[in-house]
Length: 68
Image 1 (cartoon, one colour):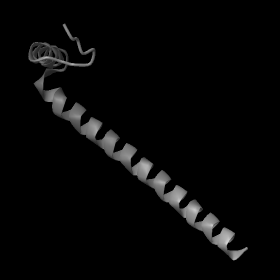
Image 2 (image 1 turned 135 degrees about the vertical axis):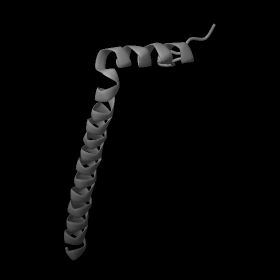
Image 3 (image 1 turned 90 degrees about the vertical axis):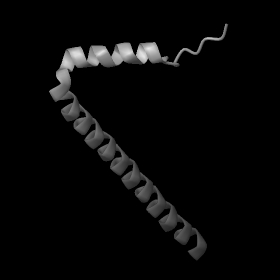
């Protein structure tokens, strides 16, 4: 029998949702999801800034090499 260590079945998913509802309540979950969304957005913006800086440095370095 094959087992997938990260596979979550329907039953497990329902149990997790019920536990989350019991712990946080229905009113707190939208606030948690909003905070999670803001965190993901901030993370993506940070990654994009790093990519822009790397591209800028690559462009600057390639320009210096071609001048020599």
